[in-house]
Image 1 (cartoon, protein in one colour):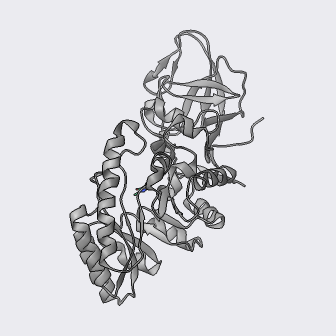
Image 2 (image 1 turned 60 degrees about the horizontal axis):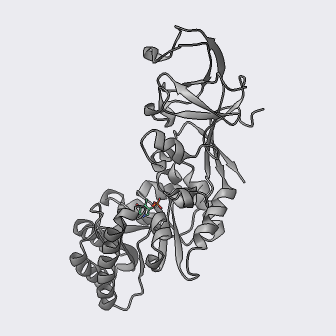
Image 3 (image 1 turned 90 degrees about the vertical axis):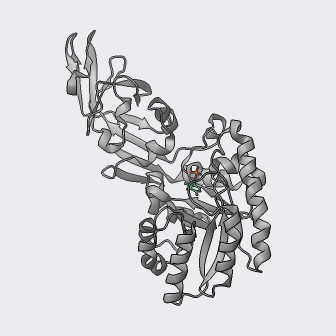
Length: 368
Ligand SMILES: *Cc1c(COP(=O)(O)O)cnc(C)c1O
């Protein structure tokens, strides 16, 4: 019997609690934790996750863009929210909702300083992003002191934190590079502290950084993927529980004969009699087309069912010849038997991409 009757993304809040406590257990008691809930909470449901983590006592949240923060505020999230990649066009909304910008360039600093003085903001909290080697966003270490000085001297702004982001914290082969990033960050921090008596906090690590570089937790850590149950390493994945489980059902079963073909462009031609199931999930739901033609599998009654033919926009067909199953039975696309990481590997991608791709039309079901 199936516990689901259509395609759903289950959000297991028990797993979220577990992962939160596991990550907290790696921190000193006075280290703060920021939860990254960008991209709709890594494809799950940002407001559900944010409200739950607010209850649990997380210290801070981060989103990528201003509009993501607006949704959280409208849902009743009161925690401080860092916006990692704000754009000047959204400053007004950002400030109206008490969202705190990452200031990553001269241009952004100038624009926000002007905005803050026009609006007569009082010591509005900002976060200074320092580029130590990811080369994505941030001030070079040499520019950072000047930027922090401008913030300190402005009555309209205050420096809440200074941070950097690691490029390869999950990769043991890049340990020297990562230690170099941390050394660059360590070199600039005392210079920033020497500028004023404001007690800003420092942070550098994402999930893999938290687990692989415990010496680099500073005052706060930023976890995204770990809270959702993945840690970019099999031995660490075992300690965590997947929050998101993508499930569907068997819509129809066909019994096909040699020579019959399956799906668009006759993507698979049957060689020996096949029992085949059609499932209501496709590439429009975030299932990569790369998983077609036997590359990907789903789990039905505990067994692997390979995807046959091409992934359609709204459906896939799977080979269930070896599986005792019937129409209406439950299917796990990813979850506890086949993790999002397992399925991502087959599509030559990473859990992050598979999770954040889960389509908006799929119903989110919260399990408490
Ligand atoms: C997305 C992001 C994180 C979270 O990374 P995880 O690997 O998911 O823990 C942390 N910091 C910054 C700046 C990010 O963009």
